Image 1 (cartoon, rainbow, N blue to C red):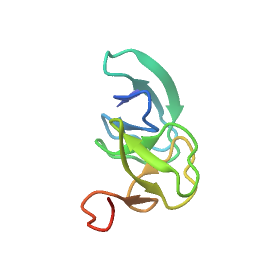
Image 2: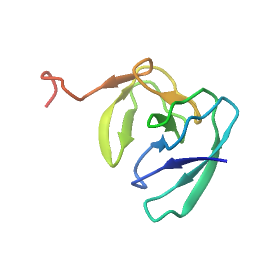
Image 3: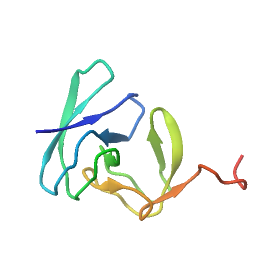
Amino acid sequence: MKKALLLSEKDNTATVLEDVASGDDVEIKDANKTSVGIIRASDEINRGHKIAIKNLQTDEEIIKYNHIIGKATQTISAGQLVHVHNLASRRGRGDLA
C-alpha cells in the first residue's frame, strides 16, 4: 500500500511519499505516523505531489500543512491529484493580501 503524509487535521490534501498509480490504495498517516485513513487514487500522482483527501468544490480553499495554498479551479474528487491544472495558487502572487 502506498503512503501519504497529512500534517494537520485541517488539511484537505496529503502529500504522497511515493509514486502512486490510478487505482492504488493510499494510506494517510499523520505526523505521529498514525494511520488516519485510506483513500483510492483516481489519478497517477508523482511522489511529493498532493492528493485530495475529501471532495472539494470550485473556489474551495486548498489547505496543505495547515496553510491555505490556493483555491480549487474546478470540482476535485477525493483521490485526485491536486496540482496546477485544478488549483489556482496563492504563492508568489502580489495581488493577494
